[in-house]
Image (cartoon, rainbow, N blue to C red; front, side):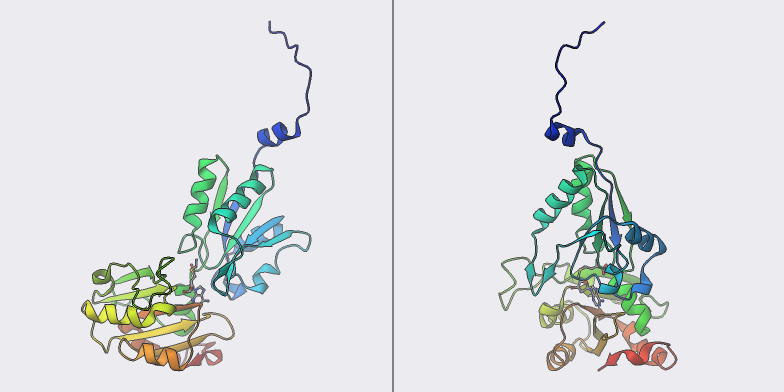
Length: 280
Ligand code: SAH
């Protein structure tokens, strides 16, 4: 028989520490058009109590969250982070540890250039349960809405997604080039989609040519895909940087490279929904 002679203590801190953590649900908000949410994402949003959301999440998507829920903006605007990635993770952990279910809402798909991987690693390390609800990534939204098949038997038997983001410190250097496997990106019979690459567009096009792609390879930028103000700028690897400058192409935008871009004009004739898209 064991004797318990300790007086009962109600230590709030200890209680919080032993509390069952809340589940964290990483939800992909899709590329912008709220109709492109998954049914599962919509259900999660309608039940949410605390939402941590990024800059690329559209207002219509956020409007699905109940009025009474806490909505915390943790994204990046005009190059400035509201919170660092470490602070976002810390906040998410703190909320979950306190027992609250947390909805972490990210643009596109959480596991495609969304740093969702780092966030679920932190959750797993702390034993916090989580779930991931995939979203339609920007490349898929752009492709479907504009009539750019990402793969095609006659044009592209492989598809590569890459990030053109320059590492911190390299961003201001005019000559800085994203640290990528250029030979892989420049392979023929492939579609290459570069996220976060508009700032480095001239250098990206030059590298692709230097690694073997012809200067007349079709290339395009797609800004704000699936949103009412979406814009497509089409050219070639040689002409696109100047076109993008003339038309002041801005983030969020994708760079799409490959001969599938050449199919766009043919498909655009009867593709529904396209007239709203500004094309250059
Ligand atoms: N997880 C997101 C990507 C986040 S990285 C996804 O799966 O789509 C942010 C980059 O995504 C932007 O810099 C831009 O390159 C791209 N992006 C996101 N939404 C976009 C949109 N509606 N149109 C074009 N590019 C977009």
